[in-house]
Length: 388
Image (cartoon, rainbow, N blue to C red; front, side, top):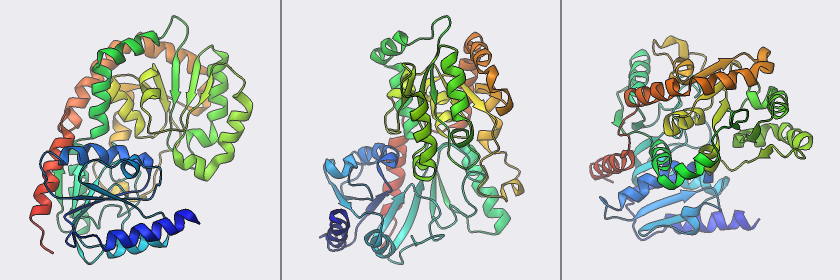
């Protein structure tokens, strides 16, 4: 109840803020999405003199608790206050990582001039996301050329007006590359380097009824622990929301094993840095792990995560489908007993995978190392051309 009334209070404060013609407004669904917005917000301080407005649905969001200079933060919850504010706000530019605008209860405000979508995953736009997930945005900040090609093909296929597509990049990728190159981090990861017969393994899959975590996690963890490996499980937040009993059972069975760890904090990169290898399915975090840290991924070949049945109408092959055997290995769910042998194979071919990862990273992604700065400049340019 306290959060409910706080949401209403902050909604009213935002609506009556002194800057009636708000230039740039960010909306964050929760703490898990803040890392995709924070780098661009920080970079805005170097090229934007105005007040930055930040709306969040999470009262634990650090940008709410300790907002940077010139950032006005408001908690609007996930209920009526959020719906009212987002559907009625006045702004030159609204930036969010939430797709499917106008599909559910969150609609475009008639008083907001321009909506920009900033990606919170490196996956392609046409298979994992719902049909029309990005149709109501005016601009898309693209991680790589593949996003541009997919969106342009989708627009042409449906006769849509061309959006503004920004060659942005992906800030979490930049952060992971920096961490991997930092000497202190190198010394930490060297201490956790794979021994002759043991790996530090991070299981970080996507979510869904046919996903790795929902169907195969117990068997995978058991096989790996029996082989003497250390296993860290990092479920997607949606798995906790939709299939929490699966995680509870996993903890009940393995909590007493010294090699087992359950870590549900998806905002902490430490688990990625410590791991020698990741096991995943169709999760975008597998791409961050491989392309950010130059480490291989072992993919469990569960059914594709398809939320848009029309994705095959595009000629573009989803990136998460095309790259897997170049940055790791793919294993059938029917052969999980072979996981230890597959890990040994990854170890033997690690130099090849590292070379592949570097080459593909340069090929796929924009502005490696300075995506936040490029994104901030693009936002200022867009906002400066809007009139309320």
